[in-house]
Length: 257
Image 1 (cartoon, one colour):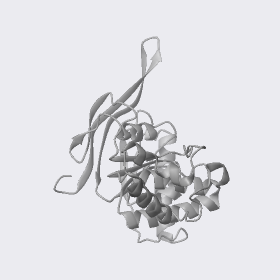
Image 2: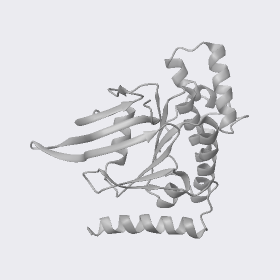
Image 3: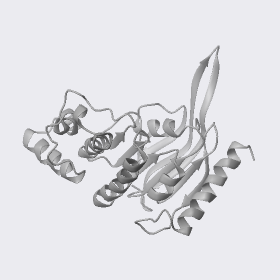
Image 4: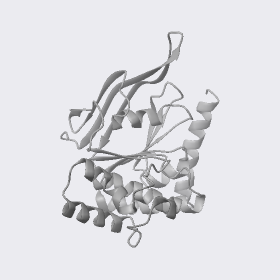
């Protein structure tokens, strides 16, 4: 991490995908972003603008075509335990219990049984799943499954938590509750979070900064610093004004203004 607290540094990132017949689709071009230690960043933009692609490159699941990306000063060249990923689809192993799902990364790290026991217990308590340690995913609600996903990602003690629309499949009431739970977990763990969402309301509720991307090829268009104190009141005039400003910006992009 450098002197001004920057943990993640992305410079001139580009990503192209083959389309066939020697054509290429440019998903990201000239993408620049710095993320400070402990920040909560939301990536927002038109559908297909490359938000998830950026997240997957940070995770090391996709190689960049051009540019550079460093975490704590080290070039990212593939997956690593310093990055935890939470997917929209939950991605839990149906044959593993809650406890054993959370311990998956610890198994890969070859942690001892006592250490695994201590770590999984800590994160089961953190995400509010005490009493469900021996339940299987098919016995859990959608919100509970995503709590397991968050606990599994945190159990490996990553430097940064990457979240790809993790609440997109949940009903509105559960989604709002999970947003509050995530903020509580973030404040307790002090983890750096990059969170992809299509919801302006969700972004303004959660983020320190909302990074708005352009239409494809995606690059940073504007960055909105959300200075509202937490917990945030969605009905306050300040919240409504911020949400409207970002919605207007996205609508102008859609209309090509």
